[in-house]
Image 1 (tube, one colour):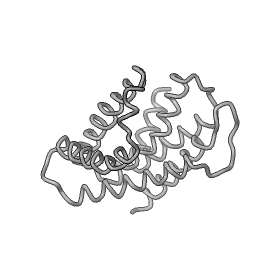
Image 2: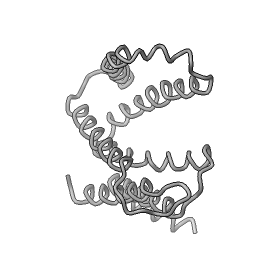
Image 3: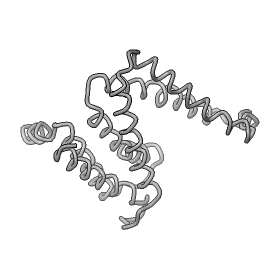
Length: 184
């Protein structure tokens, strides 16, 4: 990993730290919470997955790989569903909960992973994996608009720092700064 990518990764992690350690309605707290740890582990996991997927040079389209990946994930989850009799809870789900499940299945697990696979076809795995750091920022924005959580300045600053880190790794920081300055 070159220095630029390492710097971008550290900057993005700092932004994630700011976003995930701020509670709704509270100020910034200097604690390593489980959300931050899981986000970093998720990013590292996806980075390893992306690098392995890229190196394997699988000769199948991204949509087919996504389908197989989802099928394998379902098969690995199935024993837990059977053990806990998860199917018994299905009739108890509300329409809203079914809508959430469909959204996750179609957009997150289907379309999202398909675009991830397409991105891996044209970009370096390290560049693609950096976009995972935008996840807490998207969650923050959704929480503000959909859940009416309070806007906290330190979280917004963390989001900007995440974007800067991603831009550093993807070589777009100079373009980002130039476009911002030229718009004024």
